[in-house]
Length: 285
Ligand code: NAP
Image (cartoon, rainbow, N blue to C red; front, side):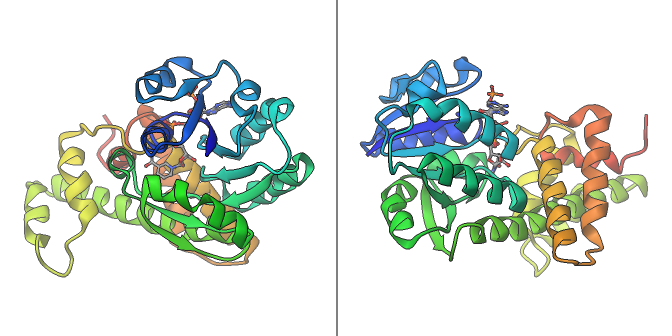
């Protein structure tokens, strides 16, 4: 398929690479061009702007920060968009923005597939993401070969919007688990204990957590490779809160999580990995 891939950041670059390696004809565009250029080595064409990236495409993929970025970039792409093009919207944008983007798709004659992904940088590099896919069944089916190129699992849901809601549910858990590990480490440190003992104590037992293994040692050292930028975790915490308000839910953790990630961002860790939320609990220096 002829694929136009807009947004080659931490997640988008490896996803575009897997699509090209699966034999699709991939054109990439990224606002900061230097992040798109290396994909030429994997057979992708690098476009100068969104409109030329989508000209002649069967499928448009967006993997950008948030709803505002997706809306702006797709508007820029408009002059190049043909009739009946599929739009795989993979970014995490939340409920309100998804409604807006579905409307934008309608105006532009795009067939909207709401399909955010689960998994972080490592699974994206390995082509082992999970795709949550919602939309018209024929459109979701038409995207299946693309999902197979980047993921080990696709979970099919109902109409557009349902996958975004499922993604928010899962991200609430991710944020809560990450902050819980962070706070436990900070508590151990504060009580004069070696926090590595906590990781050792849970290993192999019912409390063991993949995320403790993945993020814990780096949280202790204060050095984590950026897999999921903390500013995006903060964005997702806001999106969960927005969803809770809309559905009149009284979530206890959601506002606290938003505040923890906000505090770590304010302390200078917005571009660091989300695991640096540990700094929100450490004594202020
Ligand atoms: P990222 O590396 O920060 O990439 C963000 C992308 O959006 C970059 O290509 C960036 O361009 C572009 N962008 C932002 N604002 C823009 C604007 N106004 N106009 C044009 N381009 C703009 O982040 P990421 O981790 O790949 O995340 C992308 C999406 O996937 C987010 O919605 C995130 O929540 C979601 N997600 C992330 C993970 C993860 O673990 N990292 C997992 C699942 C889902 P520049 O390069 O020019 O800044």
